Structures are given as structure tokens and as C-alpha cells.
Image 1 (spheres, one colour):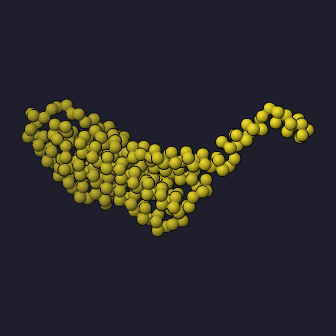
Image 2 (cartoon, rainbow, N blue to C red):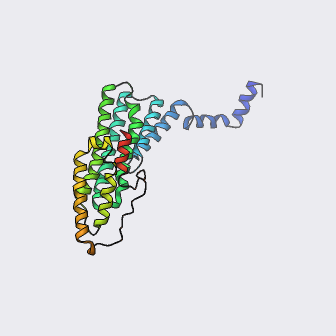
Image 3 (cartoon, one colour):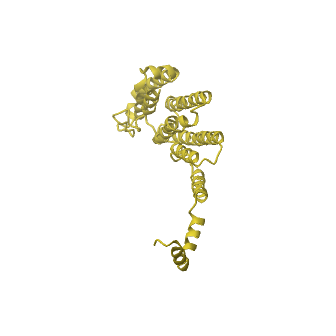
Length: 246
């Protein structure tokens, strides 16, 4: 319809102009769209959990918040960084306590390490693009936490924290031997000399117990170690992953 006056008259007669006003108020217009997106972001933030892929979620939230342009960048960076480390601490502690109770919960420790890797290659790089000092400090924290996770796994293996009935001697030999597969790696030796020594001592001790009490030990084992150290269910996987990251 080419006649503008006639177009306006017909639009009014059908009340479609009123519908357009309602749509604009509810979902139309830049201001309303920004409010809707911000509300969605707030919901996503509220649902962040140490049991989810929070490193990737925070990176996505950070990217969208920058696009909205309605927040102080430095404040946003600080908030996202603090949120990650708070969630990681909860994730790590849950994994550690679960692993101490049951050796089959190894996947939880792998998950905590995975969040560090996700953060290191994602959100961390975005947060400190122009702040070399803070980036260096955050990199050191990432590395220290990775080392701490591997040390915890080693410690629980050589401190013999599990009940014998839960992890028989044959299974303990498998666990410790799996971790020690990377003991000749230069990076692993550099960071875990004490752990290597303790693991080897414990391995010798458990093998001696197995030798002298073989008749009392079950011939079948509960521990099924994957053939590849790149398998997350392999007890050497964390150490291998750390060496690869470094």
C-alpha cells in the first residue's frame, strides 16, 4: 500500500498499531532486549555449581557481559576470576573427600583438574590481556593447584588411606604402579621427587605384604586399570596430564 495516510488509517482500524506498541514494550527495543539478556545472565550465574563445567560457563558469561557493555570491565574481571576460584575450591574439596572414602571416585579429581585446564586456556586468557602482573600471578596459582592435585593423589596412594577390604594389596600395587609410569618424565621428576620416593617405598612394602600373605589375598582384583595412560580412568592419567600441560 503506497498511500501513507491510508496505511495508517487501516493499521488503526485493525488495532495492529496497538499490538506493535505492546510488542515493543515487552520484547522490542534495545533497552528491553538488554534487560532480558541481563536477566538470563543473572539466572545462569545463580545456577553455577562446582559439579558443572563452571569454567566454560563463566567464560561465556564474561563474553556476553562485555557485549552488553553495561558494566565496569575491571569489576567484571575481578568478579569472574573470584567466582572461578571459589567454585574450584568447592569442586576440589568435594573430589578429595570423596576419593579418600572410595578409590572409585578418581573421576572427581580428574574433573577438578579439567576445570583448571579449561580456565587456563579460556577465561584466564581473556581476563588478563592487558595486565601482565595479574596474569603471571594467576598462572602461578593455576600451576600450583595442578601440582597440589597430583600430590594429593600420590599422597593418598602411599599413605594407604583406604581400608584393606576396600583396596586389596593387588589393587594397591596396580594403583601405585600406574602413577609411577611417568616417574622418568623430566617434568614429573622436577615437581614430585618426594612423591616418587614415597610411592616407590610404599610399592615395595605392599609387594612384600602380598608376597608373605599371598594365600590370604584374593587372586582376582577389583581394580581394572585401562591399557592407555591417556584414559581418564587410568591412575597415571593426572600425572600424564600435568606433564603434558607443562
